[in-house]
Length: 350
Image (cartoon, rainbow, N blue to C red; front, top):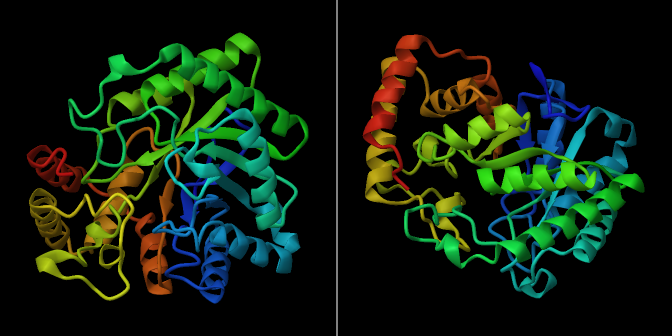
């Protein structure tokens, strides 16, 4: 296992981050125990969760994933020091989480306390903003014209950012969190947070996690350049596009218990004609080199310059084993060229 610095923090994390969002919906406590134990045995020390999980999100499963991790930590207290534990505060728009309101300074403090209680730990290594208060081009909103940026109250956004940084600073000073980061944000969001941190001597955002995969590579190159130049860790989530890049949904298949068979809060926006055409083309590349589509997709993501640690998730041990093994594969120049041929043909299928 390779280990890398998490941005400008003092944390060293594995190149694989274990995502947990299915725990409590598609996976049980026993499943989570097995995944954690296996991941640690393979050298993974980075675990990511969120107050909103499990997914698909619902009032019934809110906080369940953190409680499952807390149950494991409570039974394995000696393992806490071996794990870089990350969690997230949900943004606005989810009615059962703080009545759907914006992230504020007080909500950061109360949410950190609630997560600590569920996780049964004294501190969170990386605390992230799940998405910004302003509308951002994520979750299918990245197409030109979808958002009107000139309608944004920039001064209000900056004031909110400053208030949030102040609350994060308070949590760091009291030892409740060690570092802070972003999720589902943009180059402007990164830069503005960094500017405010420097100007007001407040904590620096050390990382950002955004959706990034062969079907959705919009952050490459502009956001990735911003991350590299500012030493902000880039953490891709959904490197398999919600399971689509395993090939399990090809030819109209909808396996029982799979993500696409469940009700999605934002709809199954990845399920469209262009996505399926791209998946079939990538499958041909994988077949050419006698590897699975899963392996090709994860190995490609790992090799993109600027990627720090890739967040994987699995609903079975067989999936987890295959996902982790993929990071031991290095794609040749010829393989990468074949992948790029497909990527140029389908630059943004969803």
